[in-house]
Length: 214
Image 1 (tube, rainbow, N blue to C red):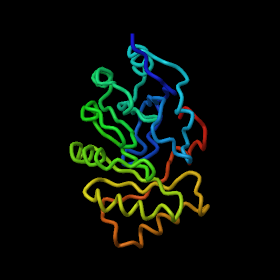
Image 2: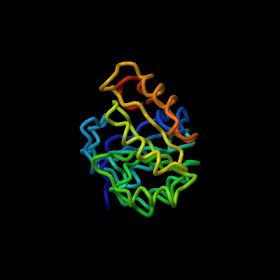
Image 3: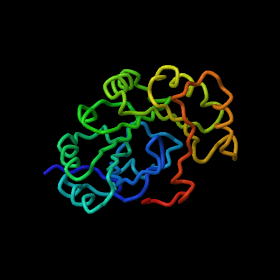
């Protein structure tokens, strides 16, 4: 029986990022990643802490009372989990996924919502275009900004995907400035951004810092 690389399963907690911020959710964090960002705040997900069957994953999340289950990583798009997605819909109203947008899997289209966080050093515009084209109305683009050097990438992505809800997310920790308001000030004063652009922090970091499992 096939087993999947799992970093952690936790919740119910709240979604800390993006347009669904603050909503109750259960998390399934798959291990393994294809981008290995140096600033990653979940490097523990690069390698599996355990391997679980589909039944074991379902049994681990179904006691939760949250209306949403969020599949994250690592990069969950590395996995073939079509059947798991179908089974999760039997217990949850919504199935969300968080991915880098480097790999397309057909099961992505089955999900309720996709949060895509493209990386400058591992960019796949073909996959990003496919996700935003097929999942329009059910996706967001999220660009993490640590300092002024990331602003050009922020503009490039916001221009290319202007019809899509777009999150400018302050990185944690901030490289350039200790005051997180600098990005909000920048976006507020920049006329290049349209009404789809929102500036948000990671609110789970504000609530719990670097504590895991929340």
